Image 1: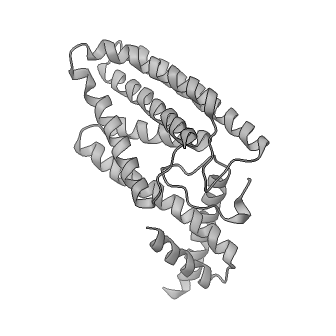
Image 2: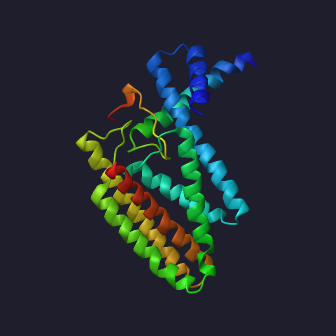
Image 3: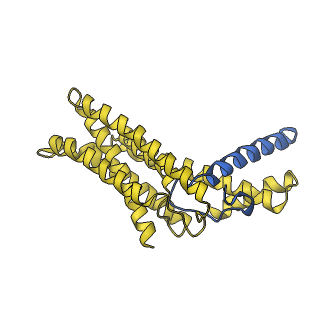
Length: 44
Length: 198
């Protein structure tokens, strides 16, 4: 199981980064709460 | 939910030896994914039990798609957001499903759906896009791009709405779906007014 942990986490991180970038290029989050945007994603 | 997302992001970042900024990006993305999934699960369940599943799906997707380019009002806390999202989408879907049972419901729906949609177009044309405190919109290029995206989305919705209204002459249920698109667009447009007033 430990063998698969790192690849699973890496894929999760990749998906999360992709979604974060997509959200950063939008006007806001899809639903009614907008957390503070990470600095590296601001003004995309 | 924020605490849970923070812990998950920490776990991923520690295992993959990411720095603070990368961890923050993962946390942001993870939060978005969870927000979309949890809201969808609750709304689909309510839609299933109130026999308004298709209306729920239409309201959920149309509000979310439009919100992406127009922005709008936001709740102060994540739990408040979840409650507001679920109540708003469910109420709009249930109204759209059952309004035709009232006297003259069919005619009212047939007239109000395009009226709601046109009012929304006007509001969106005047106000979109609207930024928030946590995500202000400063770049003129971005504002221009988001406005263009909003209009493309509205043209797409207008085609669907027209198609459903024509279909409703033959199938009553199509009117419920057209009405749900009309009220969803209006609701999203009204959140812009609220956000601007703030």
